Every structure is written in structure tokens, then in C-alpha cells.
Image (cartoon, rainbow over all chains, first blue to last red; front, top):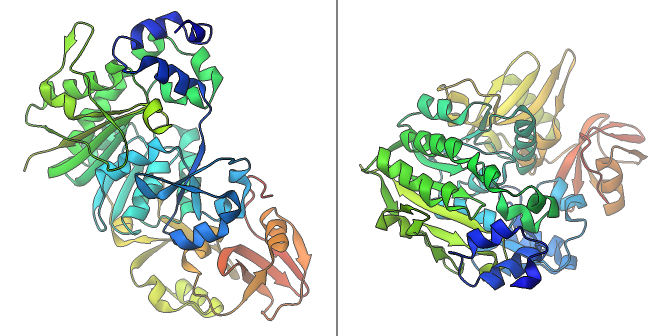
Length: 310
Length: 137
């Protein structure tokens, strides 16, 4: 383990070695650059046509998503014509998972409460065959511009873009959504593989900034669901305070909420934690899933699938 | 279907059926297109509904690149086929001289049977109307 200590803060190692399995493999994976990955946008093209156009890059399909591909050398991917006209969307592999777990259907009403830059909104729009409604929200004026740009480029005709506080929006659409995605703002430990600066910024204090907003968003997302509706809560961090603790907070507020098992064939995932520090989580929280970088060569991710009973 | 959408369909030979599943909303400057649910959404006032289909000018209607990319695929007239190099030049904001069997005015730009955007043709010059983003190489 000592070979990693120059790069990772000691506090990071002490904290995460307590519960992340295969910890050396985790640190190794977190130091490797991410493979470039993209998703075929079926609003604009077919899988076959996109693969024909991208054949020179020899894309390799992801084992858990037939529209997701990785590249050995993805240099210049964002400068290709195929990207400009929205045939492909450059997106990290694990970030494709939350919509696949949520499974929005054509004609439904879906809310993406913290949507910028729009990778999951556009993925869901394609899954819904450009029908129904996606309420795609981000409170940041800067980030919402990027969201609109990506919605335009992907050709999403079923999206309204809002710029609101997510909790306020949740109240405005209370009880009206078939599905809700809460891909919460987080300390983004997952981005360490993309950028060394992300590790320089890492601190426990940075992590502690997020649970308050995450709790507001998960509650707002839950209230937006129709009876029988389904919500996915996700983050790209491994910090339990931002994951299992937030799900537990919802269950304390809304004891009727049901945590369902997260399943995605072909994607290796680990169960949610049962405890962290002095906190013990309800048994059902272990139905949440952790995607660890050493298992699928992706960013880390956390996924919870929550159902509002009829 | 509004008068302006019929105008676009006529100009580019787009079958009316392409718009059948969608609703259109117009303000003084812009024609937006989206699903009926998008146009009827009234829980809050959104920043954007669907996609801009066209901009309304006093004497003309300018189709947008992103609107035509998604709804112009079946266009049968006033579309110019481009090579790889020509497509990159126009996406990057350039213009080129070309003899094309189209009317002067706004035209669709096609690359490998896909609409990449909109140009303005005044024989023999074809000028890009594509919004500039990251350069394409």
C-alpha cells in the first residue's frame, strides 16, 4: 500500500481502506486514466450506422449496455463530425448506468432534478424514443446553458429545461412524475481518474458540504413521484455520507419508501454498506449498489433504486 | 401544423407526417417544436421547451441547424450533399463555391445522408449558417 501514499492523502487511505474491498486494486484503478467512452444516440442514428462511421476508432462494446462503447485511443473524439451532429454522446461508462436502472418508458413523465450537463437527460430521451416529457433541471445559470446545448445537439424533443432550485421544483411537480432521477451534486471522487486536480481538492471538509443538498434533493425527488413511481438516487462518489446516509435519511422521513435491488446484467456491483463510523444503516440499504473502479474499469458510482408504494 | 411549419415542409420537401407526433409553439421570434407534453407542461415556467425549429424574420423563416438535424432527415429538396472536407469546412463556419441543384436561399447540408445543418446558398457561394462550437477536425 505504501507505493500509493505519495499521491493519495493519508486521510483518504485511512478512511476508505476501512470498507472498500480489494483496496489496493481500488487505488491502482483510481490512478489509471479513464478510457474514453461514448454512447450512440438513437434519436439521431442507429447503432449500426454509428459503428460504421466510427469504425476507424475500433469501438469496443460495454458488457452492460449495447449502445455504450469504449475506445483504446479516444483522442479527438469530441472534434469529430459524428459528435457535432449528435450521433454520439461522449459519456463516462458508469454514468450511463443510472438511466438504465431507472428504465424510463416511452410516453412517461420523468424528472432529472440535477441534470447538467445533460448526459443522463439525453440518454433517457433516447430510451423514451423522444416521446413523453422529461423535466430537466439545473439551478446554475452557467451549467444550464451547457445542458440546453447538449439537449439541442442530441435532438431531444421531449425535454423542458428548467433553472430552479431542485427542492422547489420537486414541490411544484409533487405527485406528478412516473420516474425521477436524482443524480446528486457530490464531492465527485469519481472524477479523480479524469483529473489530478480533483485529488488535490479532496478533503473530508469538501465531502461534508454535500449531504445537506443531497438530502433536500432526494426528499424532493421522492415527493415528485406518483404513487407507484420509481426514483434512482446516484452519485459519483464513494463517501457513505453522500450515499447510504442520504438514502437512510429518506427512509427515516418516508418510512413507506421501498428500496429495491439494483440490477444491471454485465456490470459488476457491490452491495451498499450496512454501517459507517457510528452509523448503522437499515438492512434494505444493502440493496443499493456501489460500482467500484477496479471491477469494470470505470469511475466509482453509487446507485439506489427507490419506489413510492401505490 | 402552423403556417410556418407548412412553409418549411414545402421549402425542403419534408413530409407533413414528420410533424404529426409533435406540437409547435411560436413566439414573435422563434418556432419551437416538441412533444405535446412538452408544450402543455404548466407546473413551472421552463427556460426552454423542446428545440428551436426556426427563427422568424420579417421576410423569411430561417430553419435552425439542430431542428433540421432531427426533423429534416426526410427532406427531398433544397439539400446539398457534402464531402467530408466540405462538411468540416462548413461546420467550422466557412463557405465554399459549389454548383448545386437547389434554389437560392436557405438549404440543408447533408453529409453521408445525414443533415449536419443549414447553409445559405447564393449561386455559386454556399455559406454556413451552423452555430460555431468546438472546431471539427
